[in-house]
Image (tube, rainbow, N blue to C red; front, side):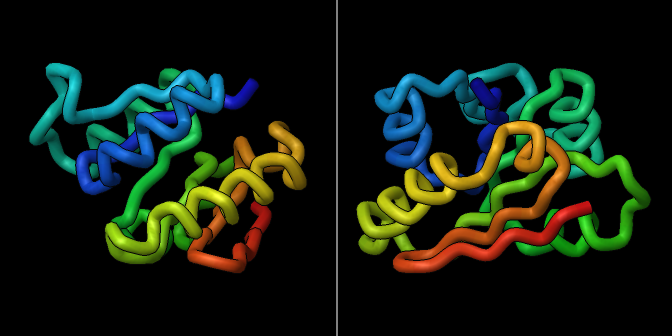
Amino acid sequence: MTRFLADEDVYAITVRWLRAAGHDALFVCETAHRGVTDDRIWDWAQQEGRVLITRDKGFGRRFVASPPPRLGIILIRGEFQEMPAVHMTLADALAAVPADVLASALLVVQAGRYRLRRS
């Protein structure tokens, strides 16, 4: 099963949803890494072999700019009130995208649709 690292900007409801679905999801806000730079979060996710979940489009740009092999990133798009629909779409994406692909791809998820960019 894919392991996740949820950035500080991810809603706590998303982390709870991932855990309830049986996923191994670390939440930066619950660790000593709270408040560290994006560079440190990036490095930590790579060292731990975790797909980074974030709402920060800067990580998406970093994905595109970095050479393969790339860190897997899930970019969540949407506001708090849209999260139930976003979670449904994320569930569909996680069921459809193989873990080995997700580990090095950029998955952009919003209510009702997702798109995948591979390394």
